[in-house]
Image (cartoon, rainbow, N blue to C red; front, side, top):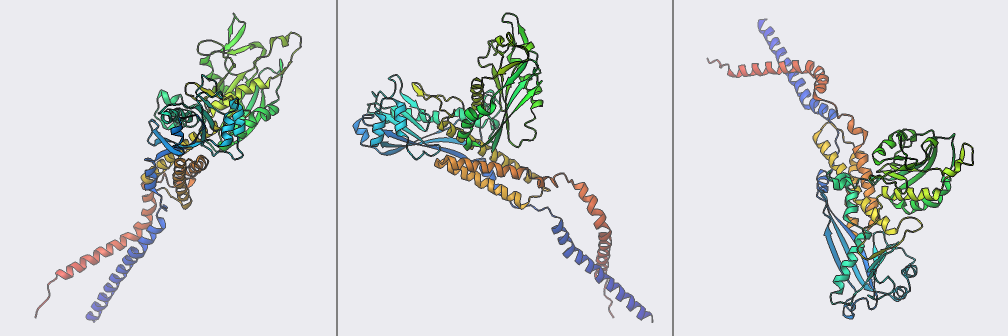
Length: 555
């Protein structure tokens, strides 16, 4: 009877051991992997190596230049060597991690018959009209015509001419080093029409070290897919002034042609408004000598903030907003003038703020008050106003006057207010700026995701990262090939995709999920189950180890 009870006890002990081992095996083999898989942070793969390689990206900006030689522009021996191609390359000295090289590929050839006929005309304007071909030149390309040293096409004291389109004229020379001398002149003209150190420095102003040289370049707007332009009429004294302005007609005649010419750089929307009782917020000073009021240069920054609160245009805008304000001073502070740093009145009576817009003060003629009762009717001269606003608009987009070489004649402005090569120069700058922005964004995102392992990386985020990297590489290749239009489009895609990935809301879900919260969640779940299993395994181990060390009995 005792033997049977002992046998039953041993059987129950063996069964308990097997049950404990079974539960432990299920928990370790199935439970832990299943828990690990279902609770792990999903992180799609990213091209980290390609992103790190973008920091060492070398941009080669190739400008195709077709050089056309007329008869008697170079010695006859040199003309017999045509056609051939010469490449001039130099590195832009900027304090930036991305190396930028400018490459002018000059394709030399002889002039065709119709080109010879056009360049033998009486004036350069007639020659330009005759040289206009049905097919347009590609964006970023230039054509330079080399004329005779004694040609009357240009004034005798001028060595070169830059036209409104993608063409220029350079005087030739009868010299045994004619190609070298003319080549240097062509490079100077081509740089003025395309890429200069100042243009690229302004484009990369936000990415360059903080110093005085780069701070002066921070005036142009940052690159964007679109821009909103708001024209506002401020009438702080409607009891004295009944102001009328034909803003619709002015925008149609002056602003819209300029924006149409600039449409390749982004989308534009224009609106206008009239604000009554809108004050500048700065009390002007009275000048007894001239019986007028003035605002000095130091008080101008304090003018914008009080007015900006009344505009209300940038609060709900997805794109950068440019504000152009026409301010008619109240009767008590009329006339009102703006002074420069030397205390002299500004000729335009206007000023602009970088990346914000401009303000023009429009004084009412004092003779208007003599024969009229208040309020006097004021008709705004929109031609004078739009001349100022268009000049400010060019500066805010970084379209400044080029640094032309000595003895170079610059063509007058076109009806659109924008030369074709100025648009190309803007697209060069915007392409480089977009690539720098996309590269910085992708690098910051890769560093963030590499340091914080809790962040979820969804497939759509990874897809945008891959698109951005591919767009950066494509844009760099197109720039090196001289295809400016496609390079600019690819650079815009790179910025858009990189910012979509960087600002994706899913990246923030588990960003602030510390380890102590993990322990607070998992310990109540695993501790009640793990303690009995671990104690059983320890007991089994100790009993097994004790049975192995127990000596066997011998008869």
